[in-house]
Length: 108
Image (tube, rainbow, N blue to C red; front, side):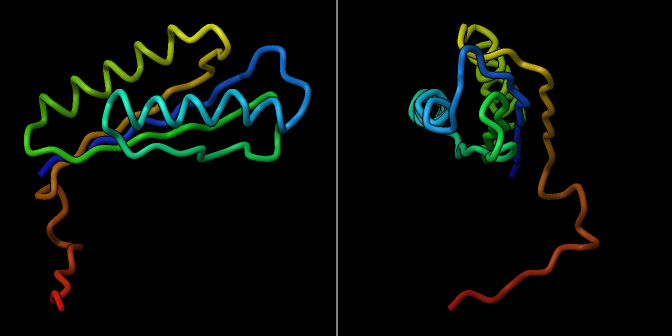
């Protein structure tokens, strides 16, 4: 199993309130979920109206699929005129990367 996540630190354009920020961030999060089938959320800078942290993650059986989706998400975000990407971080890992610290919980 492969897990990948990407997180963006964004500067928002002509925004003067948290309400205006929500009107930009909420559609971005919804579009990420709908277009790319990733789990997405606002993850940082929730009290700042000109900044936003938005993250997305996915799980797949194939590493190449995770890389492809994260690449598409990054290109899509970079093309959005209402935001400026200040930083983008991504991580891709396998379920076999750290077996020493894994705990298996019983089902049921």
